[in-house]
Each structure stands twice: as C-alpha cells, then as structure tokens.
Length: 185
Length: 174
Image (tube, rainbow over all chains, first blue to last red; front, side, top):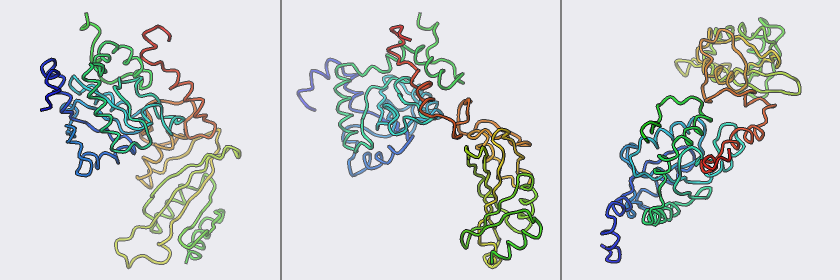
C-alpha cells in the first residue's frame, strides 16, 4: 500500500474502497462500445485501475454510457441507473451524451443526458481513446476523495425535477417513483 | 431472360410499366389499385419472399412512392432458372393528402413490421393491418418524422432544448 495514502484510508475507508474497485456496467448505445473491448482486455487492461465489467446493474457502481441516447434508449438508461446501488457514479462517454454530438438535430436523440440522470463526469471526444477512460477514472478518484462525485445524492434530493424531465420526454412512466415524495419527510 | 418475365407480366397486366435497369433487377410500375393482384400473381410465379417494403416521400409531386422488393426462394439450387435470380421492385404512387393504402399481409405475412414502420415514420395508414402501434418511436409526432416537411431542427429547438436543466428548474427559471 502507498504510505502517502494511509491518512486517507484511516479518514474514510469507505471512499477508498469504492474508489479502487469500480465495477462498471457498460451501456452500449452507440459506436462508443468499440473502445470498450480493448480497454478491458490485455491491451490496455482496465483492471490495473480496479475497473472491471460486471454482468448486471445491481452489482455495479460505475455507469458508462457510450454513445448517443435515443428516446427509447433513455428509458433503459434510467431504469439501469435506478437499479444500481449507492454509491453510484455515472460517466458519459463521447460527445453524443454531452450535447447530442453529430446527432444533435435528430428527431429522436435526447441532446443533454444530464437533464434526465445526474452525470458525474464527461469524457469528450468522438471517439475518445481508451486512455481517456483511464484519465476519467483517475479524475473520478479525485472527485470521490473530495466527495464531489455526488450524483446519486443529487438524484435523491432533486428527484422530482429529474422525474419531471423524464416524463416530459417519455410521457407517462411505467414504473413508480424511485423516491416517493412521502418518504422524504 | 428477364424479357421472358416482362412478357409474362405484360400479358396479364398490360398497364404495368416494366423497365430493366440491369441484369438482376426488374422494376415494375403499376397504379395503386393493381398492387395486390400483381403481388399475388408474382407470388404464384415463385417470388415467395417479400424482403422489404420501402417508402419515398416525393413532396414536389405530392405523392408517396411505395416499393415492394420481391425475391424467389427455391428449395434447391437447381430450381433457380434465369428468371428467378432477379430481384423485382414493385412500385406504386399514392396520394400524399390521402395517405391510405391496403395492407399486403394477406399475401405476404412478412409485410407486417415494414408497414408498421412506414405507418410510424411516414404516417401512411394501412387498411386491414392488425396492429399499427409504435415500433421504433416512443410518442406521437404532429408530422411523422420521415416526411419531407418535418423540420427536425425546429422540432429539436422546440422540444429537447425547451426542457430545462435540473439546476435551472430549482432556481425557478422554468
């Protein structure tokens, strides 16, 4: 263990634990998924950073959305995000989730993903290289250290605003609210 | 080769315009009432596979063009004659104002998803189709999005851009 980090471990062991074992659910919405196989396998080996893919969102704490988000996909993105356990971090990969990218004027692509779910960080580029994922991961470590990667807390606090935005695009949602209003009181 | 096919179709449907753009392609243009009978005629000839139904919006002519792609599927390779190797494109024009047509499901069951898609994206109503519900989209559009008069940029500005960021909502900037 790095001795310099010893104080951090003593101060907040939970944070340090989350930080070095990020289990990722990759959401393959668009072309971004092509960068994922090399980054999780021998060539770039994401496991050096404690990043490893998992099978289901219930086992994951990092959500990587790789590509444009159509309205139908948004439904799946929201459901996946809500199934993950806290603490959870969401990262948008590529320029399409940021502001629509090259599909910004499409009739069926949502332009700003952070209107519908909270995003802790963005990886800009079209396409970003696999190295960018690792830069993002190390940035995320810093954010977790400083406790500003608080997307899941924002989601809980401002859930009614997020839900309102989701309903505006998707119409009536088929599932009940994740945080009903009565629970908060 | 294809000339034989042309003669066969012309003998039954004298009004059909047939052109042969290349060796493996036969384009048949018929008027809108004849499509169903031509489809069943071609099916009996051995073109048993409807591989696609496509639609084009000719906004200047004020018409939609429906295109049916037909192929022959034989059990054995030996059964393929020279005729069966070609793809048939069956075209018809329908009015844009009265976007209604008859479904081809009775003859080719595989037309179902294509007609559903055309109904969703071009707004053509297929009479006799059992379920014209949403296939790809999640909600209704005022103008179906694949029509030429659908302005995507205007739509994006009026719909997606109008949704406020959560931070703005909180400050009451809605």
